[in-house]
Every structure is written in structure tokens, then in C-alpha cells.
Length: 142
Image 1 (cartoon, rainbow, N blue to C red):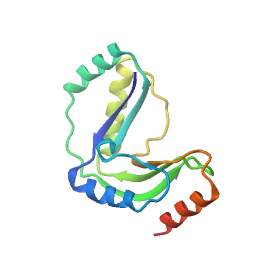
Image 2: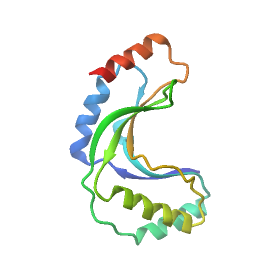
Image 3: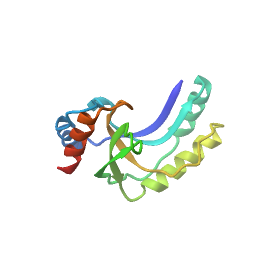
């Protein structure tokens, strides 16, 4: 199964995010119920690995994080495929490090990549036409 670990978006941030998405006239918006901040992408793991990790995580406690979201950006370089908003908060990087350590302790390999906390707002086709690219550019200028 394909899996990831994430934080739910606080209720008070969902309305502004969905309003922001409503102003985007290109791509496929992520449904409100699927908005999240990914802490670790696990990729394909077995059900046994998922159970073991869930058991270990059930004992894990971490202080609350005052999450703020700001800074629209794109993943995908010259051919963007994701629009996201950055996630910020004291303790967020520490939480990611702890979670990554627990994932590796459970025998799940994680790529050693830079943690870039974000919430995906929309996805785009890789072959986005020039008209859609222009509309995306206009949206980002607002």
C-alpha cells in the first residue's frame, strides 16, 4: 500500500484554503477532506509495516505546533505539476525528524531529502498548455 504520515489542517485554516483554491481556474484542486501537511512520504509499504509503525506512533507524544501557512509555490520546475502553500511552525522540523527516525526504526526506508513542509492545493497535467500556464501565472500574481 502507498502511505504517508501527515498532520490534519486545523479547522480555522480550511476555509481560507478552500477560498484560495476557488480562485484557481486551472488544474485539479485537492478536495478539502484531503488537505494535509505531509510529515513523511513512505511510498509502498506492507500492511505489516503499516501496523508496526501505527503501533509505535500510538505511543508517541509531541507538543502542539502553532501551524501557519504562507507562500504559494510550485513543484515541478518548468513544467509545474503541484501548487502548494508552505507550512511553518516552531517545532515542525523537530517533529519531522522524530517521525522520520520512528519510520526508519520500523524498517521503512526514507529518502534523505530536505523537509519542505507544505499543503498541496492543486495538481496539474504535465502537458499543461500555454493558456493554462498563463492562467496559473495570473493566479500567482494576485
